[in-house]
Length: 89
Image (cartoon, rainbow, N blue to C red; front, side, top):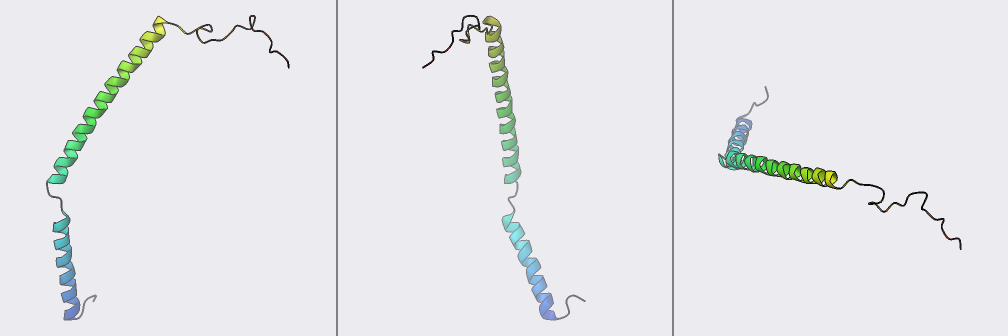
């Protein structure tokens, strides 16, 4: 048998009682669940806002891309026929 003396049973009872008291003291109660739900709701709202801003930015990007297509001349690239050789030193 694991516990044989009255002292061992007393220590066991004391440890069980201390564990119960520490468990009650460290319990957050209903506050933690309410805070978790509020944080989740805030996160969902943030994600929806971020996704809306991303979609708006992508729509602007697409609108700008359709309005002014990118060509070699708009990027500053000189066609090979107009390129002049580098001056040698």
